[in-house]
Length: 358
Image 1 (cartoon, rainbow, N blue to C red):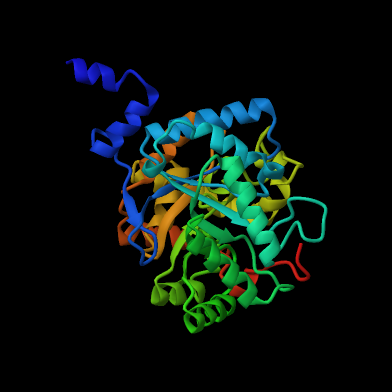
Image 2 (cartoon, rainbow, N blue to C red):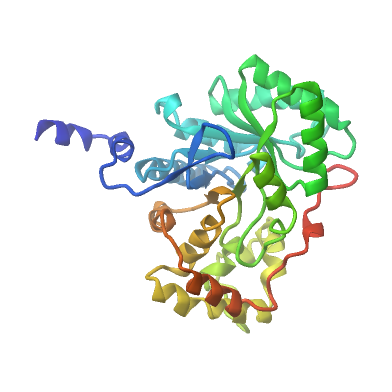
């Protein structure tokens, strides 16, 4: 059939097929209480140094994500010293803007100046304009405060965010790694002033890291805020590739001295790694890889709108998308909890922002 041949003729055609429901099983959820739907898996554009080799790989991964039905893309001004946004903008060139959801963030330093960081009105406005240029777009669907800023009055930050929505440069606003007290304070100011409310929270969340469950999630459920969770596979630990008593595989995040090793270090002990090995037969029982099981697990939480996945190779995305739409029975959830007894972090005080600001 001529039309079928033409559809497969370009790589974006597979993306079109996903929209029309031909064979792709990527499911979508509402972001909080909004009317905007996002894909259950969000592609996280967190490249580390922005070299040409890494940039080319990142572009291939974005194209693969599009082909597999992922419509939601997350980045930040600080990633790879602003270069990640440029790479994502290049990767999405030629894709119909209305067909994907684009997220970025502001807070961490993007320069050496005192005002090249934080959530002051000056930095928010300047950073948003710079992000739009790098992403080659007139607007972002979601703009998030990447941490809480102790040095800027909260009302100043929220007014600036509201003005960005009024200007059309931003459609929705949210935050990343804020605690329940900070979230409640912001919502009170927004309601008192008639500002647009926060609709998203972007916390770390996984089988091993559940610090949002006791305070942040209940508040967000009440207030219509959805979770877009990062590191659902625990910095890679939940893949099961790190073995107790053994050296980390060469080239893995645990050996990355540019930052990856520091982030994963809290999980790199024999007690955690031994517990994680108990998850492997559970994953096999439900015909999932350990990584797929980890992603599917976070998606069982009804307050989670999407799980952010990263990848260095398109094949990794192809495997991870199989977690979308998976329903885990209570017996499987209970087995996971039993396997991880004694190694799960639940302390809500672990949600922190730099004080003073970075």
